[in-house]
Image (cartoon, rainbow, N blue to C red; front, side, top):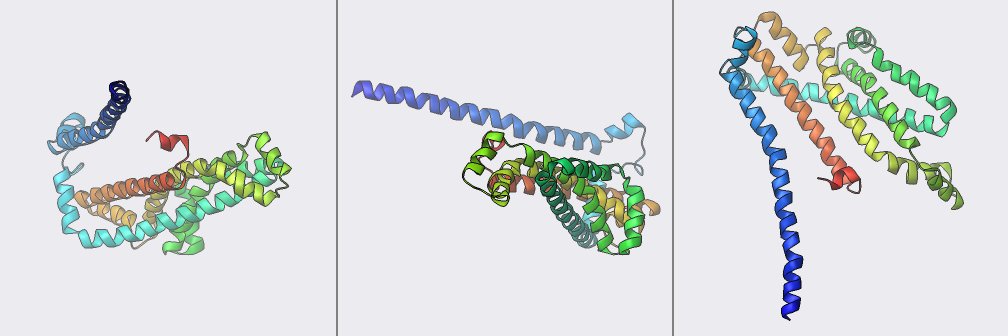
Length: 278
């Protein structure tokens, strides 16, 4: 019995040590960005950046002034945030879905598909400044044109990354599926799509960041609502605290959407190696 207790004690000690080491390893990961962010805001509030870059307060408002602008204009900012958020989500999911369809078609016909993916990838070379007036001319000044801009900007990334994921299958796995008399659709759903899921979430994370840029810049041209419209309008009026409030809200919106995609990734593909490390 003494021997068994000593063995149990020896077994339990490494587990406790592993738990403590894992907690110690997680603390710096959380505390370091938080501490850096608080230090950044403190230097900004104390006008350290103004002294360093020779800026005036009207050029770079301090965080307290931006917070006051958010509080005083909360109703308008909330309404415009929902409007811009609808453009971001609508355009991102439409563009990502079209990119996935293009990648699926290209993976089914790889000889012609590589050329098609290259053509789709060239959409990233089109500057948004040139794309926005065209889409406004095609779809009008409403929300549809901004969704179209975001869709075009996000389709290429999804198509390229999803095509790589769909083609990253071991030949032995495909031969095994064929040995079980699986058809092309079954191979795609059971093998290719499952293997490509990590790539799809990577593309979605990239597209979330790209969507914010597309929606904000698209609202600069012809729009009567949205954070981009308010940002452009307030810069013209010289109301920089409110303009910077739009920038801050857009940044927070981007972070929230990114982490929502990351949460969905952890729930849908917990088996992936990247998720087991967290």
